[in-house]
Image 1 (cartoon, rainbow, N blue to C red):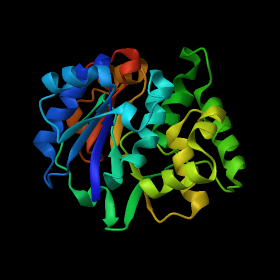
Image 2 (image 1 turned 30 degrees about the horizontal axis):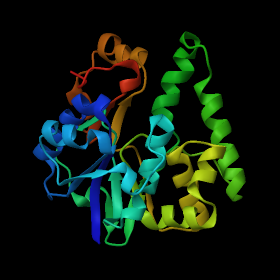
Image 3 (image 1 turned 180 degrees about the vertical axis):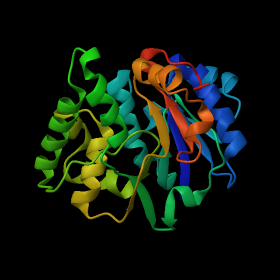
Image 4 (image 1 turned 90 degrees about the horizontal axis):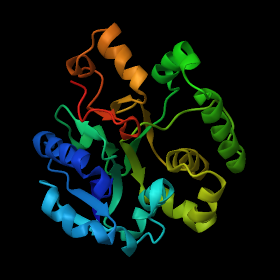
Length: 259
């Protein structure tokens, strides 16, 4: 079993974005961390023909039979622990890319202790609380209600912390514990949100980790992107001091890169 790998669950609809991620990993992967891609069986050959850089492409159905749609994507990412390829894995979404060099030390404190993205989500909530009137729903209320429900399920106390955005640094022992104790399908039937189950699960389990801020900046919404580009006059370079890369959310058809 390897100590840590990069992992991306994808499908043919995201291959254009995955090409961008793949090339960024090839350029910035200073410690040559192996990069595994997981796709549905029917997309395997197209992935091999399309994606320029990877270590291995594996098939979802070999370890996660419920792999279709958005819920299936989250389930598959959680069930990756069953492959026993690596103790830790950095789960990166296809709509992300690195813009500067990265090393194992960015993800692991030492051989047995990972970092875990865990923060108060100030950057997103600062945007949301100012511009929430533009949206027909309350993202803060929805996020916090789901977190409180999951915290209550485990009996966790304390403040609400956010465990996003991607990339996520995950310990397979946490997912194995969650599956053994509760059943991952059963947990996802309550709330289909892999990052919240993992974060609160790691706390409930007593797993070893060091909390850290987001590894990537994230453009959640088109309005957020326009704010940075048009009103604040940001370019990608302005994110470089704080982050390793960028998430350009595909759900609003964001451009492949910030610039």
